[in-house]
Length: 106
Ligand code: HEC
Ligand code: HEC
Ligand code: HEC
Ligand code: HEC
Image (cartoon, rainbow, N blue to C red; front, side, top):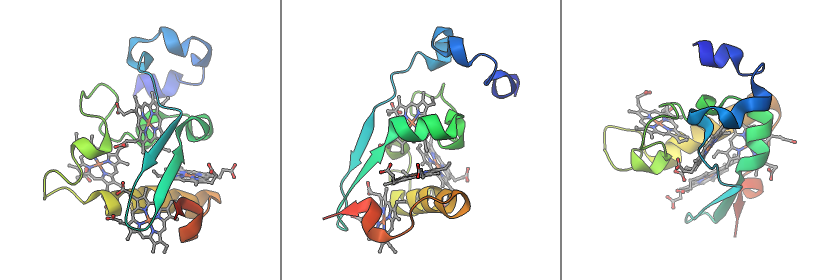
């Protein structure tokens, strides 16, 4: 993964690379029966640095939004499980919040 390797080096010209000409949202608001979750995309992006850590199917896929696959095909883990695994597992490893009410706001 050459692109991954060079990522830190080309940080200053990221936006010149077509793959990154995507316009990432600043925040993503998700609604659930447990209360809405406001995901600070901009903040996480700055902290995580490699888009594909979360966008595990890659950034060139037209259907990169999690919801375009998760919850659509029943062989793919449901969105709740996918998010809980991805969000919470990283938080457990890297000191992010794990209490329900930090993510879920009634
Ligand atoms: C910490 C996890 C995480 C990181 C890192 C991350 N994203 Fe996202 N991104 C998400 C989530 C979650 C959504 C919401 C998807 C949904 O609602 O299904 C999203 C949505 C998006 C969207 C809007 C939906 C779509 O796919 O069209 C774009 C564009 C996007 N991200 C681009 C990026 C880019 C570019 C980077 C790297 C610079 C990046 N993301 C890094 C988690 C992340
Ligand atoms: C193009 C389809 C597709 C998109 C888009 C997609 N996924 Fe997935 N995802 C899959 C498939 C298929 C699997 C199961 C096979 C595997 O593990 O690769 C999976 C598995 C996962 C898993 C592991 C399953 C588990 O419960 O532990 C997580 C976590 C996950 N996805 C999170 C996400 C997140 C978050 C996004 C959006 C940023 C996303 N996925 C976008 C298809 C997709
Ligand atoms: C790859 C690692 C990683 C992933 C994946 C991740 N986070 Fe985080 N998140 C962090 C870290 C690290 C912090 C602590 C940042 C700090 O304290 O400055 C954090 C902080 C937060 C916070 C509290 C601060 C704030 O931004 O309001 C919320 C809420 C949050 N994450 C929600 C989510 C949600 C929802 C998802 C999944 C859609 C997610 N995170 C996925 C690493 C991650
Ligand atoms: C790091 C953030 C985070 C934490 C911590 C978290 N969740 Fe979630 N949870 C989410 C996200 C993101 C979703 C997906 C929302 C969606 O469906 O769009 C979700 C979905 C859910 C759903 C599914 C709701 C529905 O409408 O299908 C339930 C129930 C839930 N969470 C319960 C909990 C409970 C209970 C806890 C504490 C033990 C918890 N969550 C902790 C982020 C989090």
